[in-house]
Length: 333
Image 1 (cartoon, rainbow, N blue to C red):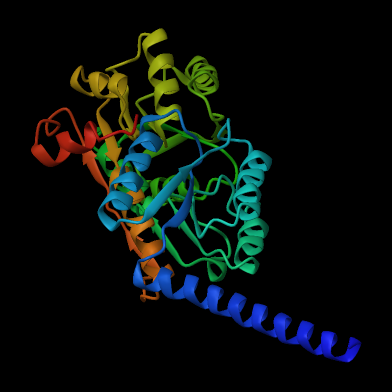
Image 2: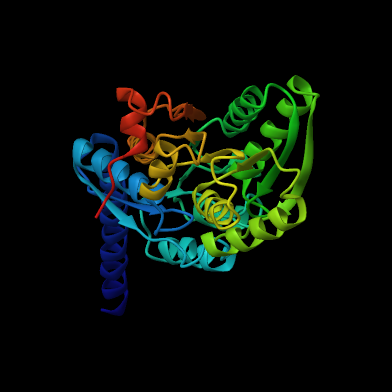
Protein backbone atom coordinates (compact mmCIF):
# COMPACT_ATOMS: atom_id res chain seq x y z
CA UNK A 1 0.00 0.00 0.00
CA UNK A 2 2.78 2.45 0.87
CA UNK A 3 4.48 1.79 -2.48
CA UNK A 4 1.28 2.52 -4.39
CA UNK A 5 0.65 5.64 -2.32
CA UNK A 6 4.15 6.88 -3.05
CA UNK A 7 3.67 6.22 -6.77
CA UNK A 8 0.42 8.17 -6.71
CA UNK A 9 2.08 11.07 -4.93
CA UNK A 10 4.85 11.17 -7.53
CA UNK A 11 2.28 11.24 -10.33
CA UNK A 12 0.48 14.14 -8.64
CA UNK A 13 3.76 16.07 -8.20
CA UNK A 14 4.73 15.55 -11.85
CA UNK A 15 1.29 16.69 -12.95
CA UNK A 16 1.53 19.77 -10.72
CA UNK A 17 4.94 20.65 -12.14
CA UNK A 18 3.60 20.25 -15.67
CA UNK A 19 0.71 22.56 -14.86
CA UNK A 20 3.13 25.11 -13.31
CA UNK A 21 5.28 24.95 -16.43
CA UNK A 22 2.23 25.38 -18.60
CA UNK A 23 1.17 28.35 -16.44
CA UNK A 24 4.58 30.07 -16.77
CA UNK A 25 4.59 29.38 -20.50
CA UNK A 26 1.07 30.76 -20.72
CA UNK A 27 2.16 33.97 -18.95
CA UNK A 28 5.02 34.41 -21.40
CA UNK A 29 2.71 33.76 -24.34
CA UNK A 30 0.18 36.20 -22.93
CA UNK A 31 2.87 38.87 -22.60
CA UNK A 32 3.96 38.33 -26.22
CA UNK A 33 0.39 38.34 -27.52
CA UNK A 34 -0.74 41.30 -25.43
CA UNK A 35 -3.27 39.23 -23.46
CA UNK A 36 -1.59 39.75 -20.11
CA UNK A 37 -1.85 43.07 -18.26
CA UNK A 38 1.74 44.24 -17.84
CA UNK A 39 2.73 46.11 -14.70
CA UNK A 40 5.35 48.73 -15.62
CA UNK A 41 7.15 50.62 -12.86
CA UNK A 42 8.17 54.14 -13.94
CA UNK A 43 10.79 55.65 -11.63
CA UNK A 44 11.72 59.32 -12.26
CA UNK A 45 14.49 61.30 -10.57
CA UNK A 46 11.82 63.36 -8.81
CA UNK A 47 8.10 63.98 -8.85
CA UNK A 48 7.53 67.68 -8.18
CA UNK A 49 8.95 69.50 -11.22
CA UNK A 50 6.97 70.13 -14.41
CA UNK A 51 9.39 67.93 -16.37
CA UNK A 52 8.61 64.77 -14.39
CA UNK A 53 4.86 65.42 -14.39
CA UNK A 54 5.07 65.61 -18.18
CA UNK A 55 7.05 62.36 -18.35
CA UNK A 56 4.27 60.81 -16.26
CA UNK A 57 1.65 62.10 -18.70
CA UNK A 58 3.54 60.50 -21.60
CA UNK A 59 3.83 57.17 -19.79
CA UNK A 60 0.09 57.13 -19.07
CA UNK A 61 -0.69 58.03 -22.70
CA UNK A 62 1.37 55.08 -23.95
CA UNK A 63 -0.31 52.71 -21.50
CA UNK A 64 -3.75 53.83 -22.61
CA UNK A 65 -2.92 53.43 -26.30
CA UNK A 66 -1.30 50.03 -25.87
CA UNK A 67 -3.98 48.52 -23.66
CA UNK A 68 -3.43 45.97 -20.89
CA UNK A 69 -0.61 48.06 -19.42
CA UNK A 70 -0.65 49.43 -15.87
CA UNK A 71 1.76 52.24 -14.88
CA UNK A 72 3.10 52.25 -11.32
CA UNK A 73 4.72 55.66 -10.75
CA UNK A 74 7.07 56.29 -7.85
CA UNK A 75 10.16 58.44 -7.29
CA UNK A 76 12.51 59.25 -4.43
CA UNK A 77 11.57 62.21 -2.24
CA UNK A 78 14.68 64.21 -3.20
CA UNK A 79 16.60 64.32 -6.47
CA UNK A 80 19.89 63.67 -4.69
CA UNK A 81 18.62 60.63 -2.74
CA UNK A 82 20.51 57.85 -4.52
CA UNK A 83 19.82 55.34 -1.75
CA UNK A 84 16.13 56.21 -1.82
CA UNK A 85 15.94 55.57 -5.57
CA UNK A 86 17.81 52.28 -5.20
CA UNK A 87 15.24 51.25 -2.59
CA UNK A 88 12.39 52.14 -4.97
CA UNK A 89 13.92 49.91 -7.67
CA UNK A 90 14.43 47.06 -5.21
CA UNK A 91 10.86 47.38 -3.93
CA UNK A 92 9.50 47.03 -7.45
CA UNK A 93 11.76 44.01 -8.03
CA UNK A 94 10.33 42.44 -4.87
CA UNK A 95 6.83 43.12 -6.20
CA UNK A 96 7.79 41.24 -9.40
CA UNK A 97 6.66 43.95 -11.80
CA UNK A 98 7.01 43.04 -15.48
CA UNK A 99 9.40 45.84 -16.35
CA UNK A 100 11.04 49.03 -15.09
CA UNK A 101 11.45 52.44 -16.75
CA UNK A 102 14.11 54.37 -14.83
CA UNK A 103 15.73 57.83 -14.85
CA UNK A 104 18.81 57.09 -12.73
CA UNK A 105 19.90 59.73 -10.25
CA UNK A 106 23.46 58.44 -10.52
CA UNK A 107 24.94 56.77 -13.59
CA UNK A 108 26.98 54.27 -11.56
CA UNK A 109 25.18 53.90 -8.21
CA UNK A 110 22.04 52.52 -9.88
CA UNK A 111 23.83 49.85 -11.95
CA UNK A 112 23.69 47.09 -9.26
CA UNK A 113 19.95 47.64 -8.75
CA UNK A 114 19.31 47.32 -12.50
CA UNK A 115 21.47 44.18 -12.59
CA UNK A 116 19.40 42.80 -9.70
CA UNK A 117 16.23 43.49 -11.67
CA UNK A 118 17.61 41.77 -14.76
CA UNK A 119 18.61 38.71 -12.73
CA UNK A 120 15.02 38.56 -11.48
CA UNK A 121 13.82 38.54 -15.08
CA UNK A 122 12.72 42.19 -15.04
CA UNK A 123 14.05 44.27 -17.97
CA UNK A 124 14.81 47.99 -17.64
CA UNK A 125 14.53 50.88 -20.08
CA UNK A 126 16.56 53.94 -19.06
CA UNK A 127 15.30 57.45 -19.83
CA UNK A 128 16.48 61.05 -19.42
CA UNK A 129 19.87 60.25 -17.90
CA UNK A 130 22.20 57.43 -18.93
CA UNK A 131 23.52 54.45 -17.01
CA UNK A 132 27.25 53.69 -16.97
CA UNK A 133 26.71 50.08 -18.11
CA UNK A 134 24.30 50.08 -21.05
CA UNK A 135 24.67 46.30 -21.50
CA UNK A 136 22.29 45.64 -18.58
CA UNK A 137 19.46 47.70 -20.10
CA UNK A 138 17.02 47.27 -22.98
CA UNK A 139 17.16 50.81 -24.38
CA UNK A 140 17.96 54.44 -23.58
CA UNK A 141 15.34 57.09 -24.39
CA UNK A 142 16.54 60.67 -24.00
CA UNK A 143 17.43 64.10 -25.26
CA UNK A 144 20.83 64.49 -26.88
CA UNK A 145 22.06 66.29 -23.79
CA UNK A 146 25.48 67.08 -25.21
CA UNK A 147 23.82 68.88 -28.12
CA UNK A 148 21.51 70.66 -25.67
CA UNK A 149 24.58 72.13 -23.98
CA UNK A 150 26.10 72.98 -27.35
CA UNK A 151 23.09 74.96 -28.58
CA UNK A 152 23.02 76.79 -25.25
CA UNK A 153 26.66 77.81 -25.78
CA UNK A 154 25.84 79.09 -29.28
CA UNK A 155 22.86 81.07 -28.02
CA UNK A 156 24.91 82.87 -25.37
CA UNK A 157 27.97 83.21 -27.61
CA UNK A 158 26.01 84.77 -30.45
CA UNK A 159 24.10 87.13 -28.15
CA UNK A 160 27.44 88.31 -26.75
CA UNK A 161 28.97 88.63 -30.25
CA UNK A 162 31.66 86.19 -29.19
CA UNK A 163 33.07 88.31 -26.36
CA UNK A 164 32.48 88.48 -22.61
CA UNK A 165 32.55 86.63 -19.31
CA UNK A 166 30.25 83.69 -18.60
CA UNK A 167 29.36 81.40 -15.69
CA UNK A 168 28.25 77.78 -15.98
CA UNK A 169 26.44 76.51 -12.87
CA UNK A 170 26.54 72.71 -12.68
CA UNK A 171 23.79 70.58 -11.11
CA UNK A 172 24.67 67.41 -9.18
CA UNK A 173 27.59 64.97 -9.25
CA UNK A 174 26.68 61.70 -10.97
CA UNK A 175 23.74 63.07 -12.99
CA UNK A 176 24.69 61.86 -16.47
CA UNK A 177 22.22 64.04 -18.37
CA UNK A 178 23.38 67.32 -16.84
CA UNK A 179 27.04 66.28 -17.03
CA UNK A 180 26.58 65.87 -20.79
CA UNK A 181 24.96 69.32 -21.03
CA UNK A 182 27.85 70.84 -19.10
CA UNK A 183 30.42 69.12 -21.32
CA UNK A 184 28.61 70.11 -24.52
CA UNK A 185 28.43 73.72 -23.35
CA UNK A 186 32.08 74.02 -22.34
CA UNK A 187 33.55 72.23 -25.36
CA UNK A 188 31.43 74.23 -27.81
CA UNK A 189 32.22 77.51 -26.08
CA UNK A 190 35.97 76.81 -26.16
CA UNK A 191 35.92 75.70 -29.78
CA UNK A 192 33.53 78.22 -31.34
CA UNK A 193 33.86 81.28 -29.07
CA UNK A 194 37.50 81.67 -28.03
CA UNK A 195 36.83 85.31 -27.09
CA UNK A 196 34.53 84.29 -24.24
CA UNK A 197 36.05 83.65 -20.82
CA UNK A 198 34.55 81.24 -18.28
CA UNK A 199 34.53 83.00 -14.90
CA UNK A 200 33.35 79.82 -13.14
CA UNK A 201 32.51 76.34 -14.43
CA UNK A 202 33.14 74.02 -11.48
CA UNK A 203 30.41 74.95 -8.97
CA UNK A 204 27.39 72.73 -8.25
CA UNK A 205 23.97 74.16 -7.48
CA UNK A 206 22.42 71.27 -5.54
CA UNK A 207 19.05 69.82 -6.45
CA UNK A 208 16.55 72.44 -5.22
CA UNK A 209 15.82 75.97 -6.47
CA UNK A 210 16.78 77.42 -3.08
CA UNK A 211 20.18 75.70 -3.09
CA UNK A 212 20.73 76.90 -6.66
CA UNK A 213 19.75 80.47 -5.77
CA UNK A 214 22.16 80.56 -2.84
CA UNK A 215 25.03 79.25 -4.98
CA UNK A 216 24.18 81.66 -7.81
CA UNK A 217 24.12 84.58 -5.33
CA UNK A 218 27.62 83.63 -4.19
CA UNK A 219 28.81 83.70 -7.79
CA UNK A 220 27.04 86.99 -8.53
CA UNK A 221 28.62 88.57 -5.47
CA UNK A 222 32.02 87.31 -6.58
CA UNK A 223 31.79 88.19 -10.29
CA UNK A 224 28.74 90.47 -10.67
CA UNK A 225 30.54 93.50 -12.10
CA UNK A 226 32.28 91.30 -14.71
CA UNK A 227 29.36 88.97 -15.54
CA UNK A 228 27.95 88.98 -19.09
CA UNK A 229 26.38 85.52 -19.46
CA UNK A 230 25.01 82.64 -17.37
CA UNK A 231 24.07 79.04 -18.22
CA UNK A 232 22.09 76.74 -15.92
CA UNK A 233 21.47 73.11 -16.82
CA UNK A 234 18.01 72.02 -15.55
CA UNK A 235 14.71 73.34 -14.20
CA UNK A 236 15.50 73.73 -10.45
CA UNK A 237 18.95 75.06 -11.32
CA UNK A 238 17.43 77.61 -13.72
CA UNK A 239 14.79 78.68 -11.19
CA UNK A 240 17.50 79.38 -8.63
CA UNK A 241 19.68 81.38 -11.01
CA UNK A 242 16.68 83.46 -12.10
CA UNK A 243 15.96 84.31 -8.45
CA UNK A 244 19.55 85.32 -7.84
CA UNK A 245 19.76 87.53 -10.94
CA UNK A 246 16.48 89.23 -10.00
CA UNK A 247 17.69 89.78 -6.43
CA UNK A 248 20.96 91.31 -7.67
CA UNK A 249 19.30 93.52 -10.29
CA UNK A 250 21.02 91.64 -13.10
CA UNK A 251 17.97 89.96 -14.69
CA UNK A 252 17.72 91.03 -18.32
CA UNK A 253 21.19 92.56 -18.29
CA UNK A 254 23.08 89.26 -18.16
CA UNK A 255 22.52 86.96 -21.17
CA UNK A 256 20.90 84.02 -19.40
CA UNK A 257 20.14 80.61 -20.93
CA UNK A 258 18.59 77.77 -18.94
CA UNK A 259 17.14 74.29 -19.45
CA UNK A 260 13.46 73.21 -19.30
CA UNK A 261 10.30 75.27 -18.86
CA UNK A 262 7.96 76.02 -15.98
CA UNK A 263 5.34 78.77 -15.59
CA UNK A 264 7.74 81.21 -13.91
CA UNK A 265 10.52 80.49 -16.39
CA UNK A 266 8.23 80.93 -19.40
CA UNK A 267 7.10 84.30 -18.03
CA UNK A 268 10.73 85.29 -17.51
CA UNK A 269 11.42 84.34 -21.13
CA UNK A 270 8.57 86.58 -22.26
CA UNK A 271 9.95 89.38 -20.07
CA UNK A 272 13.45 88.87 -21.55
CA UNK A 273 14.93 88.09 -18.16
CA UNK A 274 15.80 84.73 -19.71
CA UNK A 275 17.20 84.83 -23.26
CA UNK A 276 16.90 81.15 -24.04
CA UNK A 277 15.49 77.88 -22.68
CA UNK A 278 16.68 74.57 -24.09
CA UNK A 279 13.52 72.51 -24.43
CA UNK A 280 13.21 68.75 -24.27
CA UNK A 281 10.09 66.67 -24.97
CA UNK A 282 9.31 64.98 -21.65
CA UNK A 283 5.90 63.73 -22.81
CA UNK A 284 7.58 61.93 -25.73
CA UNK A 285 10.23 60.62 -23.35
CA UNK A 286 7.69 58.94 -21.06
CA UNK A 287 5.62 57.75 -24.03
CA UNK A 288 8.52 56.21 -25.98
CA UNK A 289 10.05 54.61 -22.88
CA UNK A 290 6.89 52.71 -22.01
CA UNK A 291 6.19 51.76 -25.64
CA UNK A 292 9.75 50.48 -26.04
CA UNK A 293 9.63 48.37 -22.88
CA UNK A 294 6.24 46.86 -23.75
CA UNK A 295 7.45 46.05 -27.27
CA UNK A 296 10.46 44.26 -25.75
CA UNK A 297 8.25 42.32 -23.32
CA UNK A 298 6.04 41.25 -26.22
CA UNK A 299 9.00 39.84 -28.10
CA UNK A 300 9.65 42.66 -30.56
CA UNK A 301 13.06 44.07 -31.46
CA UNK A 302 13.71 47.60 -30.17
CA UNK A 303 16.32 50.27 -30.78
CA UNK A 304 19.13 50.56 -28.26
CA UNK A 305 19.05 54.39 -28.36
CA UNK A 306 15.94 56.50 -29.00
CA UNK A 307 16.43 60.30 -29.23
CA UNK A 308 13.52 62.59 -28.34
CA UNK A 309 14.93 65.89 -29.61
CA UNK A 310 15.96 69.28 -28.22
CA UNK A 311 15.30 72.83 -29.40
CA UNK A 312 16.02 76.38 -28.24
CA UNK A 313 13.16 78.67 -27.18
CA UNK A 314 13.84 82.40 -27.18
CA UNK A 315 11.75 85.52 -26.60
CA UNK A 316 11.66 85.88 -30.38
CA UNK A 317 10.31 82.39 -31.25
CA UNK A 318 8.34 81.41 -28.15
CA UNK A 319 4.98 81.83 -29.88
CA UNK A 320 5.81 79.43 -32.72
CA UNK A 321 3.40 76.45 -32.45
CA UNK A 322 6.11 73.80 -31.96
CA UNK A 323 7.91 75.87 -29.32
CA UNK A 324 4.69 76.88 -27.59
CA UNK A 325 3.67 73.24 -27.17
CA UNK A 326 6.99 72.37 -25.50
CA UNK A 327 6.89 75.45 -23.27
CA UNK A 328 3.57 74.25 -21.84
CA UNK A 329 3.70 70.46 -22.01
CA UNK A 330 0.90 68.19 -20.88
CA UNK A 331 1.18 67.12 -17.22
CA UNK A 332 -0.23 64.25 -15.20
CA UNK A 333 -2.41 65.23 -12.24
